[in-house]
Length: 396
Image (cartoon, rainbow, N blue to C red; front, top):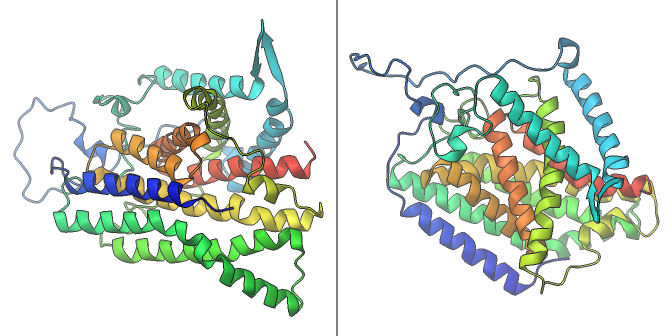
């Protein structure tokens, strides 16, 4: 269930190389959101500099496409789950034959969502692809120019060292899961002896809840304690983790999930073509968790707790909210997204899926940068991980 030593060593060397790059980065920009660096449309008019300028407020969000009746969080959740069920039960099981080529309807749906998003952007006068993702500046497109992400390239070297050290610790610490698993397994057996109703089929899932939950909480506490500053809290507006449950998140979440499936389906064959020598495990840990030996729904729910709830929450707080923005101490946001995607793919220690997982990490980072709401990538990630468990429960 755990990666071998060679995979762990390769991943740790990758993390060390990226950390060294961050520490050598030059100081080039002030620590303001990207939107603050967009040129004013009146830049040709000279003005007196202010004695003590304050950071500009972010541009307004584009108008929501959701009708008022669907903006309540519970209404959004209901529609999202209905669309998700339709995708898993229908689109993921059907295909379209184009000559000798068979294309899944879920892939076509993902491409349709990306096309619709590009068309919506052009309809409101912006480029099909955000200008800042291409390294350009479009003063007419301030509504989504990375306005929610930190830019740390002007931080003092001591602050960069502190950020790099935190990132390195949090990237390597999950490899310690195997070292503490015996302790939590013994604890669970003791609890079962005292009457805890766990079956053998749910023991692995329960152990993951304890061991990974403990490490996740410790790492989040570490990040928050070291990087909670006045004016830049770790949790809250203007800080690292921005979370808005009451905002219209239905379309970014449901559309982001459908698009993620399409992107994954397109990139996975490329990974196999480039690395055909890799052995693909026929049944990984998640597949075993999703198919408990006793077939009981209770065992399935216990096994799903960490992959479908704990992992999406921690990995998005860690990968998107912290590591992605920490990388801006060395590079622009568009490059930090690429580096964060590569780290996300390598962090899973699955060489057979490194490219599609890296693509997912990049795309979910873009979702966070565009929405400024960590709820969006967390929900997309949770829906993604839940597919195999839902399919098992429904015998799909």
